[in-house]
Length: 522
Image (cartoon, rainbow, N blue to C red; front, side, top):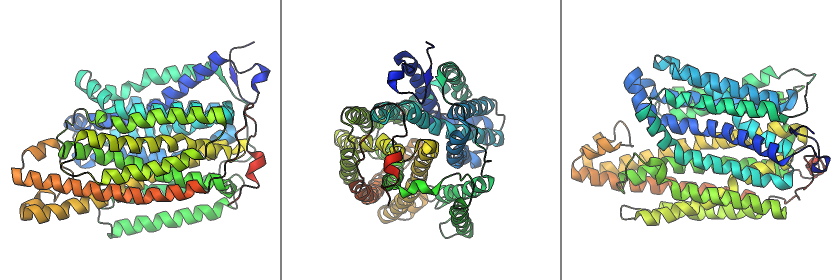
């Protein structure tokens, strides 16, 4: 008996062996860590990178290029895996990510770094989708929640540890090792996947839908640029933003039209006939909207208002991310033991609404203990939602659509994060500037003229009156941002109420959802 992991066989066949499953899961967790950890590490290293390479005016593109490439490639990787085999596409994405990492570490100027970060992003899109789709192939639905909960835990650990790891690497080895550190981890993941994982070979007779890929890429790129540039690089009503919005809408409308006619569509529209899949896409969008907005404004509030150190910025989120980690594991275990899951999106949405409302009540007198409790409530809500959305989405489609189901759900979460950062950021900036003008007059307007988010050094240089005004302004800005998040989370609760609890099968990775896909229509 070979010690390999094979898909398509029930446990009774004796093919799936516990030790080999653990080896593959370890490799998948490393791959997930690579994709999640990278941006967190680079954020800490950016000041040092700019100091050596220059190009401060292009700084935002180091992150934007990665995000754009990841979002645009995500649905393509999912479809390629469905058509030509999951293992090959996943290995390819790891190799591309590692090439991008090596080139980024060797970059000699900001232009090269931005281009190489885009290469990294292309690979990262395949890592995220590949991990979830391979779990969907290997693990029966009844067991899947437990393992996807582990992946959520990896994401939480990456968000907590990323800034600390990035600071340590940059201070001791130099910023280039923030990229080089991916190489040994990636090689380990490649070796484990290559030797232990065996999935059925596929070869689709249909070619790749290049027109669909192009339309979707243009549409996603335009949307991400609008949400990234709007209110910062360009005014929301500027010609550039209007042009990008029109281009994005036209491309996505054209994409939907073409998907009804393509021989092998990138995103088969029939998957949205499943009520549960559509609802999970909505919930995933909202989770992304809230989660990335919270991780942006909570450290800012704690540093500016509560006087916390920026050095340990990852630890500031520990109550939220720790609660998310524990709840994800518990939700996965309960789902595995009972086969029931509807309670989690409903309870998670309620906790999210309550937690965000509590965060919106914070002011200049809120203690760190109180804000930590509020963050923990939000973390409990996100832990109930994070991987259950993927589990239910995968359980709502046929096995042949596992890749596009995983990639589409991931894409909605990514787009939600872009919208969350943009909309909550615009509201925050507007409120900060208004309050600064009210409390500090002309000086307040001048202080926040360039940016409503001041670093610790800039804040320390302000006169005491202006510093106090800024603390009130940040409190007011976070109040508006989190209150908006609570309102948006109500949509998640509305979607969760209509989820139909289709029993999860406990036998091997069969076409578990074929019987439910037809009747479960919107």
